Image 1 (cartoon, helix red, strand yellow):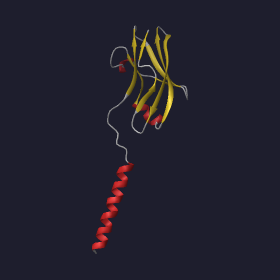
Image 2 (cartoon, one colour; image 1 turned 90 degrees about the vertical axis):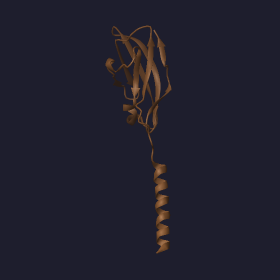
Image 3 (spheres, one colour; image 1 turned 180 degrees about the horizontal axis):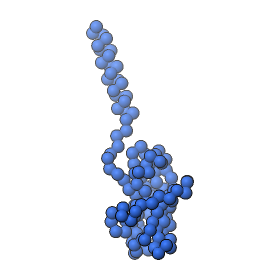
Image 4 (tube, helix red, strand yellow; image 1 turned 60 degrees about the vertical axis):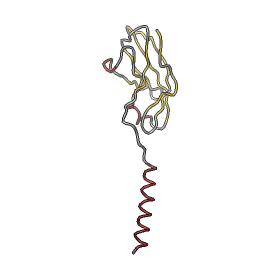
Length: 123
C-alpha cells in the first residue's frame, strides 16, 4: 500500500510541475502604442494594417492626452499574436494627410509591443 501512495504522490507532483511550465501568466495591464504629434492638433487619424489594408479607427474621445494619438492597442493582440506586422498611421488636418508614418508592431501571448517607428512627430 505504501509504494502505491508514494508513486501516486510522485506522479501528481510531476504532472503539476509540467502544467505550471506550460501556462502563460499575463499582466492585467492594457497596452496602447501611441504617437505624440507636436505643432498641431489632428482633426482625424487612423491606422492601416498593411497586410490586409484594414482601417483601424480610434475616436478622438479615446485620446487620453492632448496630442497623443493611439496607433494600436491590446484589443488587436489576438489578431497578430506570435508575429509582427507593419502598420501605417495617418493623421489629417482639414482632410489633408499631414502624417503618414510606418510602424512595425509585434505581439506575444499577452500584449502588443513597438518594434520600430517614431514615438514623436513634429509638424
